[in-house]
Image (cartoon, rainbow, N blue to C red):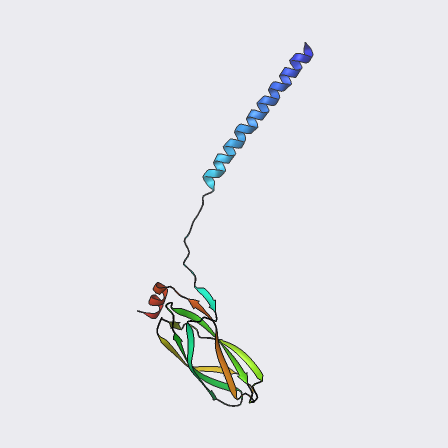
Length: 158
């Protein structure tokens, strides 16, 4: 009889402890759920970078030497697509008279925005450290950022 009452007593204590732990756990979950709030912020859309965009074409480019190791370029770029572009990066490759590559340099056009159908003239692009043996150059568009119509309109003042 003592064994039976001891068994039921310990079982009752164990059940009471288990119920107590369950209730305490529920209270803590409710408190944590009230404290932690989900914050959702909407971010502005970022431009999409396009590598070697087909829409942008170099219409003309010239190079004038300024001293032995400096070149001054004038470039015209036309946007033949339907999307405005900004954040344009150019690649200059300088060649000797036999066509051997001597020097390569990249240059960002800064805050230039080119709307669809427009031509952008970039005068006075200065490139330093050009080898004296460079007689020719090639220019290409490495990348450009596609802009939304709203962003392009705001930044160009249209």
